[in-house]
Length: 94
Image 1 (tube, helix red, strand yellow):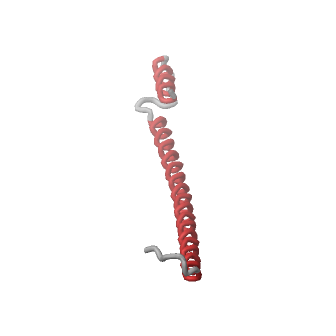
Image 2 (tube, rainbow, N blue to C red):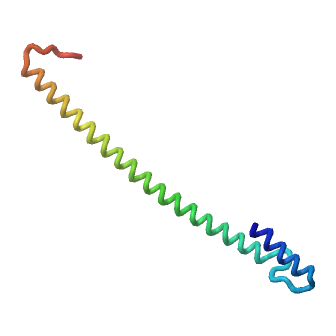
Image 3 (cartoon, one colour):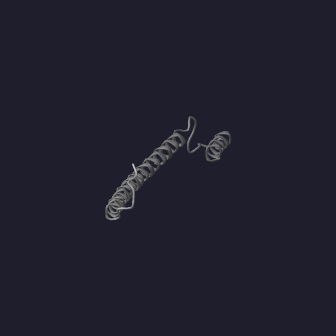
């Protein structure tokens, strides 16, 4: 809508016999659209960087949880083996 309005206003002013702010080929409009593209690209890259950092933190936390779980399971297995050795009636499972 902005581009159509810009072109329409400048063409109308030109047809009315006045000097338009941005005569064809609309260099000011091209500059504004280029600047808008640069700002959007910067915003997208910033967001991607932030999302990458968050993902790295989540992966690190997940690794810590898995390592802690493995340690706890190993401890439970050690305690179970010690209990089996203390109770002679319990058969060893393979």
